[in-house]
Amino acid sequence: MTALISSKSLLGRSLLVDGIISGATGALMFLAASPLAGLLGLHESLLRIAGFSLLPYAALLVFLAVRPTVSRPLVWGIVVVNVLWAVDSLLLLTTDWVAPTLLGYAFTVFQAVAVAGFAALEYVGMRGGRTVLAA
Image (cartoon, rainbow, N blue to C red; front, side):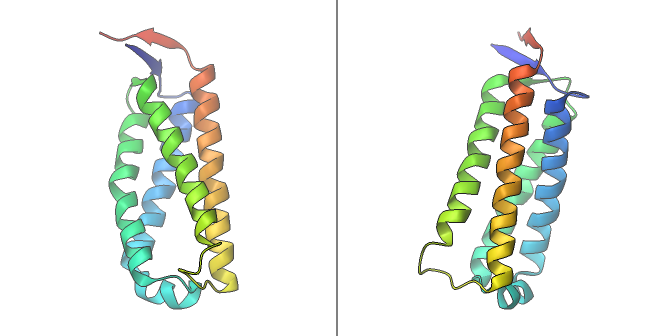
């Protein structure tokens, strides 16, 4: 199996910033779901579940960011999850399941674009990263 050099590289920095921002966003959505629901026009349960799901994901990203190497297939998985999150966020806005406010639209689109940006940075970091053989 091959691994990528992680820490202090574009990949490592991208994973770290993605993890920190995902953790902060997840904590905000989980802990403040009720007031955010009113402001954003999104379901409280959607915000709470999405926020809660971000917390272990963020912890994984930070953990991987500080590792000296990280598995290439694992990085591919992170890129795919980020792309799916971004696409699903935008698709959510096309359904009748939510009725977001203008702020809700802005929040959803902004976070989708940010997550897609992290996917791109992690992809570029993976493609440009130095590969090592892992035992």
